[in-house]
Image (cartoon, rainbow, N blue to C red; front, side, top):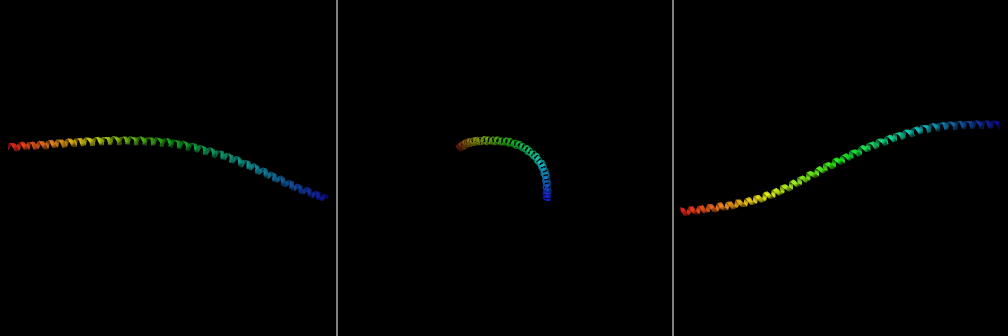
Length: 130
């Protein structure tokens, strides 16, 4: 029985030694995991800050592009309005010129008629004198 007890005690020591070794390995793994988790947290924080910084810069660029586009649109609208006003002015001037030309053509026709009548009258007088 003593031998069995001694064998049992040795088996328990071996098992306890194995358990202690496994505990040390687990503690080592836990320490490594803690370090890995800390590094992951640090990297995550850095990446998040980097992304936020880039996002802020992008937002500023987008805002600047928005303002520039709005300014260009306003300039284009103003140019369009100016061109439309110029077209309206030119159309009015064209209509005025058309009326003036019509009036001048009527005057020319009237003067030509007067000249033709005067020529006929002069010829009639010449014929009566001759």
